[in-house]
Length: 372
Ligand SMILES: Nc1ncnc2c1ncn2[C@@H]1O[C@H](COP(=O)(O)OP(=O)(O)OP(=O)(O)O)[C@@H](O)[C@H]1O
Ligand SMILES: [Mg+2]
Image (cartoon, rainbow, N blue to C red; front, side, top):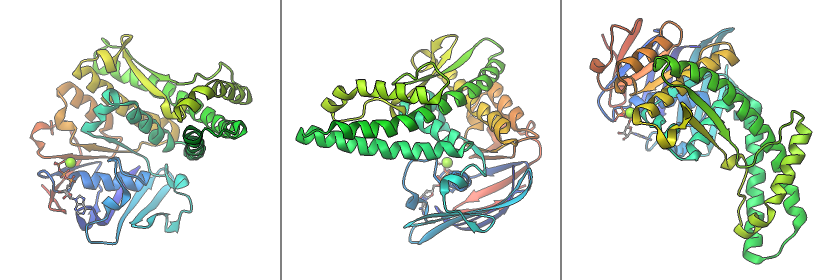
């Protein structure tokens, strides 16, 4: 995928910016708080309809304004595509080739991006919620049905939790209600877990290879899905669902006592191992960094494998943070194949000799100008 033109209006600190991005590598240089991350956020949001920074959509709208919008012209394998996202206080609308998309979940995935930012270290050392979010976003952008099951799962889970809370507060119980929610939950939970496990298997294959490359074969990285409720060993989905239901029911008493749904994909996690030792617990800072980098590079390759073309790569302030070996690995990954958008406060810490075909831009107070 190749982004030719980007237009941003009333988005964060940008009033109006139109950029021709015809270079394979685009470097945005500017001091702190000028709008570098905001620009990458706009591209990210156009692709995934939500920001990578937690928060509300209305925060994207430039202060005192009513609506933010982002447009891009992107060359894809089979032709050029126009993407548009309008963010108003009442909600957001996506457009593909000028047509309003009735479901955002079906729009997501037509434009693929991989973002790498310093906070991605949290992927390894942060709370399980960070890793679930990663899985949900990344699987969602290559498989629409995942987002559908996720939404259905969340809906059923919220209903079940509401019911459990009522029982907890009033001690009035209708067992059939719980079975009803569990049945719906099991159906979508099994879909989600199967998709997560299969995604992780592929991601892990790439990540292991890449990690071995970065560490000169000294470290072997493995990724495992940790389910709060194990799926049965069976390939038949009906069997998996009924087994999952039975397991959910065995938790019933405990859940009623606690007034909360205690198990399911919303409580699952993933674990990273280097040479069979858990990275979250035993990994050094450097190993955690390399793991996060390997994951991101693996994502790029996996999107190419599944979608058939490379995503856009957004590097927010990370290149200059990496040592020479990791920087070289990252540059070699995108060079000549992945269109990349890099932000930095200074190009001094980037080995610019290694970066070919780059255009540079200056970012200052929400204005962007072409650099030398
Ligand atoms: N909704 C908004 N409307 C107007 N300005 C905003 C809005 N949201 C954020 N900003 C401004 O955008 C600026 C931050 O921009 P951004 O995060 O892109 O900085 P940056 O160039 O990446 O800086 P750093 O190098 O520190 O990461 C802040 O100064 C903030 O005041
Ligand atoms: Mg920033």
